[in-house]
Length: 112
Length: 115
Image (cartoon, rainbow over all chains, first blue to last red; front, side, top):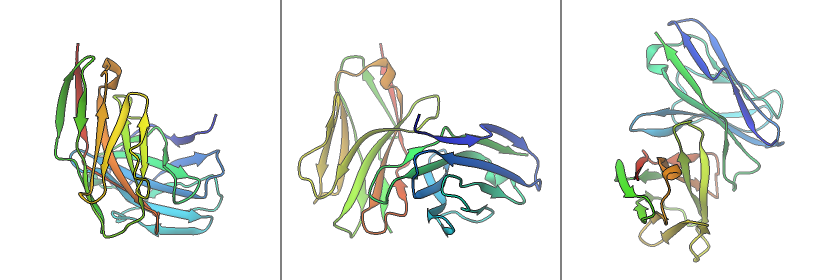
């Protein structure tokens, strides 16, 4: 089945404890990105990648890191999480820049 | 920068009736794509319908159709014969055909379906 997977689906952590949310797609998509969803704000882009080893900041990149060493994987790293990073996170991919995004199931992150 | 505005935080519709969700956007580009995504309580983001700006014909997918007014920068979603399973958050989104580096989302509209 063609899909985007994310892990973990739920995570509760404490301030300052490094964490990684994994994202993987099996559709050979070149484009991948991370979004966060907050009430009243819709989804906002954190980082994106147009291809392997090519990443760039989105609208809200502060406090996040990404890497794209393989085409299928695009992990999101929070090196020192803070409570304002409590949110619902989505990974998404697309075949090209002119097509719709396919979203993962989301990761609910709570930072206390 | 492009922006997307959904002016209706919540809407309600009676089962089997028709409802229209509004979306306006702001851009200086002429080539772009517009989308409606549905987010049910499971939180999964599901593509409902897609419209290419260069196409004058409004997109249709079964009970879902759009009214795309390019000059007015308006992109509304019409749901006909509403069903209980249509209850969800609906997001309007814009993607540039030039840069294509992101979707710009509206804040969303919660649709409630009454039986």
